[in-house]
Image (cartoon, rainbow, N blue to C red):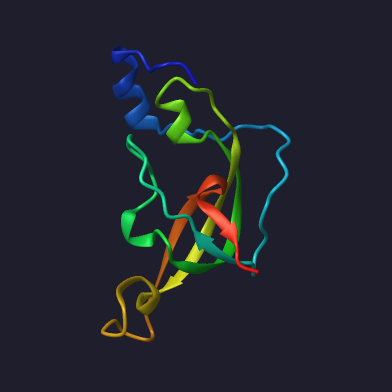
Length: 117
């Protein structure tokens, strides 16, 4: 994805800009799969929240194929992949002091996840 021209930013903000791509990429996960978020410490910005690293969740939905921001932002290509809505219990993320009724959903790219076997 090419860099956005400065003059185009107001238009993009006003109308929204999707990074969805229409490429045939096989999904690695499906709804109901138990996944483990990879523990990683990249030297650059990532869309993977630190509090979710190493945590287990359940895939609820596949949103389709999108540009992977971790590579795109650094000029390393789009690396299109699926983005999944993953549900975590509050206790999985924040420990036993968290409410047992609360959950959190994160939209996570394929490269951030591994299947729990």
